[in-house]
Amino acid sequence: MADFPEGDQALAFMCAKAIYPQGLGNDSITGRRTVIRRGWPSPNDRLLLQDKQKEVDFVSVTMDGGADKVVSAPLYRSWEVTDRVYPNVILNFTGEYVEVVFPFAEKPVGIIGIWASEDRKKPYVYAVNAEDTAQSVVKVLAGLIPGSSADGAMLYWPSHHLEGRVVGYGKSECVERRQRVRYRVSVWTNNTVTRDYLGNNIDVAMADQDWIKTLDGREAQLKFVGIEDVDNMQNQHIFRRDYLYDLIFDIVKIEWSAEVLWGADVFNQSEDHLRLDEKYLNISKNALNILHSINVQKDVVDFYGRMKINQFGIVVE
Image 1 (cartoon, one colour):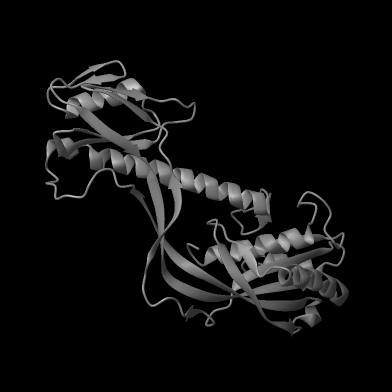
Image 2 (image 1 turned 180 degrees about the vertical axis):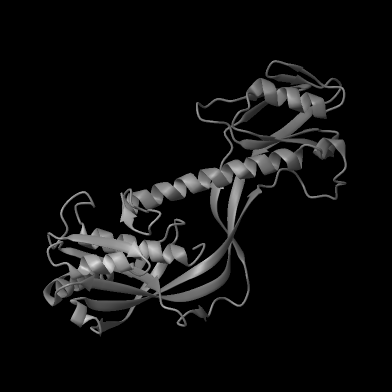
């Protein structure tokens, strides 16, 4: 989980699913309009609550300050590979020649390494980008390898027996901290019957979930803490009930890295054959981060539908 506000949003979406099981465009379980929002109701919201003819209820989700706590986590910070992106580029070697092939319709991905069999400590490396063609890759490699030439998708390096391979990327994660944050889900309405009905349905929906999906595609553990009735505004015809929940989640650091391309050795970073590696590898990592974000958004949409928080902090579709 990336940050605390994502817990607010996840809980707000959970409340919306409980109150509008057929979607926000359909009737709520009470038949009344219920506004779900992050943060406290505004003064205008409270005026709406007091108007019984409007039949508008509110559910707010806020962090409960002072209840945050760092939870015990492993004493060591170990990295774990959680995902891989496999290469889809093929190299066909024939003596002094190597052909670069993009056999699939999807965008190419992979890190190409080529070297001469008589000098395996000197690979020439290129990270393929989504906009590349086989011809553009060969052209770059020919510019890296002295004495070589490009002919379409074929690279020729005279007097050298060529070898090489293509590798992909791995996504590694490390737990930086385990955190418990308390949230307050408050039901605001102008009659106690509606408060009980809304509150009970939210509580049952939450009780059915030990883990909830967070907006970074991960999950947080959900624990019930308690219930409080807050009736100090009943003279204004406002009745409130608070449900307290703890979310326990990990603060995670994510890194993308290339798979091992060739045998380990000591290299001088200024050497020409590694000159483009860092530049294009960073471009490829940025593309992988974008791909990861898209996949995360797809997971969240699958779980919460098209819900989002608008500029006023209200859950909408």
